[in-house]
Image 1 (cartoon, rainbow, N blue to C red):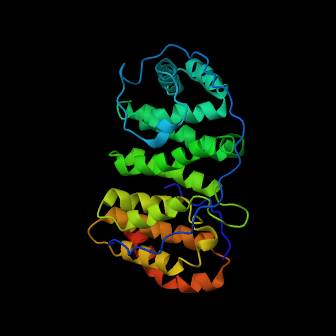
Image 2: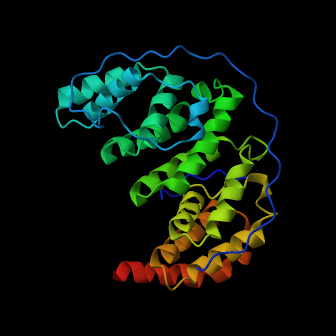
Amino acid sequence: MGAQKSAAGHGGEPGERAAQPPPPPPRPARLGRQRRRLPPPLPARPCVPARPASLSFPFAAMAAATEQEQQQFYLLLGNLLSPDNAVRKQAEETYENIPGQSKITFLLQAIRNTAAAEEARQMAAVLLRRLLSSAFEEVYPALSPDDQTSIKTGLLLIIQLETQSSMRKKICDIVAELARNLIDEDGNNQWPEVLKFLFDSVSSQNVGLREAALHIFWNFPGIFGNQQQHYLEVIKRMLVQCMQDQEHPSIKTLSARAAAAFVLANEHNIPLLKHFADLLPGILQVRNHTSEQ
Protein backbone atom coordinates (compact mmCIF):
# COMPACT_ATOMS: atom_id res chain seq x y z
CA MET A 1 0.00 0.00 0.00
CA GLY A 2 1.42 3.44 -0.86
CA ALA A 3 2.49 5.79 1.84
CA GLN A 4 0.16 8.52 2.94
CA LYS A 5 1.95 11.55 4.27
CA SER A 6 -0.19 13.07 6.94
CA ALA A 7 -0.05 16.40 8.65
CA ALA A 8 -2.14 14.99 11.48
CA GLY A 9 -1.25 15.53 15.06
CA HIS A 10 1.23 17.51 17.00
CA GLY A 11 1.61 15.50 19.65
CA GLY A 12 -1.47 -0.63 27.37
CA GLU A 13 0.51 -2.81 27.92
CA PRO A 14 3.58 -3.11 25.80
CA GLY A 15 2.87 -4.42 22.30
CA GLU A 16 4.71 -7.31 20.81
CA ARG A 17 7.85 -6.72 18.81
CA ALA A 18 7.44 -6.90 15.06
CA ALA A 19 9.69 -8.06 12.28
CA GLN A 20 12.69 -5.87 11.59
CA PRO A 21 12.04 -2.96 9.19
CA PRO A 22 13.40 -3.13 5.63
CA PRO A 23 17.11 -2.34 5.08
CA PRO A 24 18.00 1.32 4.48
CA PRO A 25 18.25 2.56 0.88
CA PRO A 26 21.49 3.82 -0.73
CA ARG A 27 22.92 6.92 0.86
CA PRO A 28 22.12 10.23 -0.85
CA ALA A 29 24.74 11.97 -2.93
CA ARG A 30 27.19 14.19 -1.13
CA LEU A 31 26.70 17.87 -1.84
CA GLY A 32 28.74 20.92 -1.04
CA ARG A 33 28.78 22.36 2.47
CA GLN A 34 28.17 25.98 3.37
CA ARG A 35 30.62 27.91 5.47
CA ARG A 36 29.29 28.60 8.94
CA ARG A 37 28.63 32.27 9.61
CA LEU A 38 27.09 33.59 12.81
CA PRO A 39 26.60 37.36 13.14
CA PRO A 40 26.96 38.62 16.74
CA PRO A 41 23.56 38.86 18.49
CA LEU A 42 22.35 41.57 20.80
CA PRO A 43 23.52 41.39 24.42
CA ALA A 44 21.26 39.30 26.61
CA ARG A 45 21.26 37.30 29.78
CA PRO A 46 23.08 34.03 29.06
CA CYS A 47 20.82 31.02 28.96
CA VAL A 48 23.52 28.60 30.09
CA PRO A 49 26.42 28.52 32.51
CA ALA A 50 29.91 29.40 31.30
CA ARG A 51 30.85 25.73 30.98
CA PRO A 52 27.73 23.88 29.85
CA ALA A 53 27.54 20.16 30.41
CA SER A 54 26.05 18.09 27.63
CA LEU A 55 25.19 14.50 27.01
CA SER A 56 27.41 12.55 24.66
CA PHE A 57 25.73 12.01 21.31
CA PRO A 58 26.73 10.95 17.81
CA PHE A 59 26.40 14.64 16.86
CA ALA A 60 30.10 14.82 17.75
CA ALA A 61 30.73 13.39 14.30
CA MET A 62 29.43 16.64 12.83
CA ALA A 63 31.53 19.78 12.49
CA ALA A 64 31.06 21.31 15.92
CA ALA A 65 30.73 25.02 16.54
CA THR A 66 33.43 26.66 18.62
CA GLU A 67 32.59 27.39 22.25
CA GLN A 68 32.46 31.11 21.52
CA GLU A 69 30.12 30.62 18.57
CA GLN A 70 27.84 28.36 20.59
CA GLN A 71 27.76 30.82 23.49
CA GLN A 72 26.78 33.57 21.05
CA PHE A 73 24.01 31.33 19.79
CA TYR A 74 22.70 30.83 23.34
CA LEU A 75 22.55 34.61 23.66
CA LEU A 76 20.69 34.73 20.37
CA LEU A 77 18.16 32.17 21.67
CA GLY A 78 17.69 34.39 24.73
CA ASN A 79 16.98 37.37 22.49
CA LEU A 80 14.48 35.34 20.46
CA LEU A 81 12.59 34.79 23.72
CA SER A 82 12.80 38.46 24.74
CA PRO A 83 9.54 40.30 25.54
CA ASP A 84 11.10 43.40 23.94
CA ASN A 85 9.80 43.54 20.37
CA ALA A 86 12.83 45.43 19.04
CA VAL A 87 15.28 42.99 20.59
CA ARG A 88 13.30 40.00 19.38
CA LYS A 89 12.95 41.38 15.84
CA GLN A 90 16.68 42.00 15.47
CA ALA A 91 17.39 38.53 16.87
CA GLU A 92 15.05 37.03 14.29
CA GLU A 93 16.90 38.87 11.51
CA THR A 94 20.23 37.65 12.85
CA TYR A 95 18.96 34.07 13.02
CA GLU A 96 17.65 34.20 9.45
CA ASN A 97 21.11 35.23 8.20
CA ILE A 98 22.75 32.07 9.56
CA PRO A 99 23.28 29.44 6.82
CA GLY A 100 20.91 26.49 7.11
CA GLN A 101 23.55 23.84 7.73
CA SER A 102 25.10 25.97 10.48
CA LYS A 103 21.66 26.37 12.05
CA ILE A 104 21.41 22.60 12.34
CA THR A 105 24.78 22.43 14.11
CA PHE A 106 23.94 25.21 16.58
CA LEU A 107 20.41 23.95 17.24
CA LEU A 108 21.45 20.35 17.84
CA GLN A 109 24.18 21.40 20.26
CA ALA A 110 21.67 23.54 22.14
CA ILE A 111 19.12 20.72 22.29
CA ARG A 112 21.58 18.18 23.66
CA ASN A 113 22.97 20.56 26.29
CA THR A 114 21.28 19.43 29.50
CA ALA A 115 22.78 22.36 31.42
CA ALA A 116 21.06 24.91 29.21
CA ALA A 117 17.92 26.68 30.37
CA GLU A 118 14.85 24.60 29.56
CA GLU A 119 13.28 27.48 27.64
CA ALA A 120 16.39 27.77 25.44
CA ARG A 121 16.44 24.04 24.67
CA GLN A 122 12.75 24.05 23.83
CA MET A 123 13.17 27.07 21.57
CA ALA A 124 16.03 25.29 19.77
CA ALA A 125 13.84 22.22 19.29
CA VAL A 126 10.99 24.29 17.86
CA LEU A 127 13.36 26.08 15.49
CA LEU A 128 14.89 22.82 14.27
CA ARG A 129 11.48 21.33 13.54
CA ARG A 130 10.51 24.48 11.63
CA LEU A 131 13.76 24.37 9.68
CA LEU A 132 13.16 20.77 8.61
CA SER A 133 9.57 21.62 7.72
CA SER A 134 10.26 24.75 5.68
CA ALA A 135 13.73 24.23 4.21
CA PHE A 136 14.40 20.49 4.22
CA GLU A 137 15.38 20.28 0.52
CA GLU A 138 17.79 23.20 0.85
CA VAL A 139 19.45 22.03 4.06
CA TYR A 140 19.38 18.28 4.67
CA PRO A 141 20.53 16.85 1.29
CA ALA A 142 23.56 19.17 1.39
CA LEU A 143 24.80 17.46 4.56
CA SER A 144 27.29 14.64 4.19
CA PRO A 145 25.92 11.09 4.57
CA ASP A 146 27.85 10.77 7.84
CA ASP A 147 26.28 13.95 9.20
CA GLN A 148 22.82 12.79 8.16
CA THR A 149 23.38 9.51 10.00
CA SER A 150 24.67 11.38 13.05
CA ILE A 151 21.54 13.52 13.17
CA LYS A 152 19.16 10.56 12.87
CA THR A 153 21.02 8.42 15.39
CA GLY A 154 21.46 11.30 17.81
CA LEU A 155 17.80 12.33 17.79
CA LEU A 156 16.65 8.81 18.64
CA LEU A 157 19.23 8.58 21.40
CA ILE A 158 18.32 11.90 22.97
CA ILE A 159 14.69 10.77 23.24
CA GLN A 160 15.83 7.77 25.26
CA LEU A 161 17.99 9.88 27.58
CA GLU A 162 15.75 12.94 27.97
CA THR A 163 14.17 13.25 31.42
CA GLN A 164 11.85 16.20 30.79
CA SER A 165 8.53 15.11 29.28
CA SER A 166 7.83 18.41 27.52
CA MET A 167 11.29 18.45 25.95
CA ARG A 168 10.99 14.80 24.91
CA LYS A 169 7.76 15.60 23.06
CA LYS A 170 9.46 18.38 21.13
CA ILE A 171 12.27 16.03 20.10
CA CYS A 172 9.57 13.58 18.97
CA ASP A 173 8.12 16.37 16.84
CA ILE A 174 11.52 16.78 15.18
CA VAL A 175 11.79 13.04 14.56
CA ALA A 176 8.30 12.94 13.04
CA GLU A 177 9.09 15.89 10.76
CA LEU A 178 12.38 14.36 9.63
CA ALA A 179 10.68 11.00 8.99
CA ARG A 180 7.96 12.76 6.99
CA ASN A 181 10.60 14.22 4.69
CA LEU A 182 12.46 10.92 4.37
CA ILE A 183 9.55 9.12 2.68
CA ASP A 184 10.33 9.21 -1.02
CA GLU A 185 7.88 9.45 -3.92
CA ASP A 186 7.54 5.67 -4.05
CA GLY A 187 6.72 5.46 -0.36
CA ASN A 188 10.10 4.10 0.70
CA ASN A 189 11.06 5.06 4.22
CA GLN A 190 14.70 6.12 4.00
CA TRP A 191 15.00 5.96 7.78
CA PRO A 192 14.17 2.33 8.66
CA GLU A 193 15.84 2.70 12.06
CA VAL A 194 13.00 4.95 13.19
CA LEU A 195 10.54 2.07 12.64
CA LYS A 196 12.63 -0.23 14.80
CA PHE A 197 12.75 2.53 17.40
CA LEU A 198 8.94 2.74 17.40
CA PHE A 199 8.52 -1.01 17.85
CA ASP A 200 11.16 -1.22 20.58
CA SER A 201 9.83 1.83 22.44
CA VAL A 202 6.18 0.81 22.39
CA SER A 203 7.25 -2.54 23.88
CA SER A 204 9.37 -0.89 26.56
CA GLN A 205 8.61 -0.92 30.28
CA ASN A 206 9.56 2.77 30.24
CA VAL A 207 6.34 4.78 30.07
CA GLY A 208 8.18 7.78 28.66
CA LEU A 209 9.42 5.75 25.70
CA ARG A 210 5.96 4.31 25.05
CA GLU A 211 4.59 7.85 25.08
CA ALA A 212 7.34 8.91 22.67
CA ALA A 213 6.52 6.15 20.19
CA LEU A 214 2.81 6.99 20.24
CA HIS A 215 3.52 10.71 19.96
CA ILE A 216 5.66 10.20 16.85
CA PHE A 217 3.03 7.94 15.27
CA TRP A 218 0.27 10.43 16.13
CA ASN A 219 2.31 13.25 14.60
CA PHE A 220 3.06 11.28 11.43
CA PRO A 221 0.77 8.25 10.95
CA GLY A 222 2.21 7.73 7.46
CA ILE A 223 5.61 6.86 8.90
CA PHE A 224 5.45 3.24 7.67
CA GLY A 225 5.38 4.34 4.05
CA ASN A 226 4.84 1.52 1.58
CA GLN A 227 5.47 -0.98 4.38
CA GLN A 228 2.18 -0.02 6.04
CA GLN A 229 0.23 -3.01 4.75
CA HIS A 230 3.02 -5.33 5.89
CA TYR A 231 2.83 -3.94 9.43
CA LEU A 232 -0.93 -3.39 9.55
CA GLU A 233 -1.68 -6.14 12.07
CA VAL A 234 1.23 -5.06 14.25
CA ILE A 235 0.00 -1.45 14.17
CA LYS A 236 -3.51 -2.49 15.16
CA ARG A 237 -2.31 -4.77 17.95
CA MET A 238 -0.03 -2.03 19.26
CA LEU A 239 -2.87 0.50 19.40
CA VAL A 240 -5.37 -1.92 20.95
CA GLN A 241 -3.01 -2.98 23.71
CA CYS A 242 -2.05 0.60 24.51
CA MET A 243 -5.69 1.70 24.60
CA GLN A 244 -6.32 -1.02 27.19
CA ASP A 245 -3.62 0.27 29.55
CA GLN A 246 -5.59 1.07 32.70
CA GLU A 247 -2.50 1.87 34.74
CA HIS A 248 -1.24 4.75 32.59
CA PRO A 249 -3.93 7.21 31.41
CA SER A 250 -1.41 9.05 29.24
CA ILE A 251 -0.81 5.88 27.21
CA LYS A 252 -4.55 5.35 26.71
CA THR A 253 -5.04 8.94 25.59
CA LEU A 254 -2.08 9.02 23.22
CA SER A 255 -2.95 5.67 21.67
CA ALA A 256 -6.54 6.80 21.05
CA ARG A 257 -5.30 9.98 19.40
CA ALA A 258 -2.78 8.02 17.33
CA ALA A 259 -5.48 5.58 16.24
CA ALA A 260 -7.78 8.43 15.23
CA ALA A 261 -4.97 10.13 13.29
CA PHE A 262 -4.13 6.87 11.52
CA VAL A 263 -7.74 6.28 10.51
CA LEU A 264 -8.12 9.85 9.24
CA ALA A 265 -4.88 9.56 7.27
CA ASN A 266 -6.36 6.52 5.54
CA GLU A 267 -9.92 7.79 5.15
CA HIS A 268 -10.09 6.72 1.50
CA ASN A 269 -8.85 3.20 2.19
CA ILE A 270 -12.14 1.41 2.75
CA PRO A 271 -10.67 -2.04 3.56
CA LEU A 272 -8.40 -0.49 6.18
CA LEU A 273 -11.26 1.49 7.71
CA LYS A 274 -13.30 -1.69 8.05
CA HIS A 275 -10.33 -3.49 9.57
CA PHE A 276 -9.90 -0.78 12.20
CA ALA A 277 -13.62 -0.24 12.84
CA ASP A 278 -13.50 -2.15 16.12
CA LEU A 279 -11.13 0.49 17.53
CA LEU A 280 -13.78 3.20 17.25
CA PRO A 281 -15.54 2.43 20.59
CA GLY A 282 -12.23 2.64 22.42
CA ILE A 283 -11.35 5.92 20.71
CA LEU A 284 -14.72 7.42 21.65
CA GLN A 285 -14.49 6.14 25.21
CA VAL A 286 -11.11 7.79 25.76
CA ARG A 287 -12.30 10.99 24.12
CA ASN A 288 -15.42 11.16 26.29
CA HIS A 289 -13.41 10.45 29.42
CA THR A 290 -10.93 13.19 28.51
CA SER A 291 -13.75 15.66 27.83
CA GLU A 292 -15.31 14.96 31.22
CA GLN A 293 -12.02 15.72 32.92
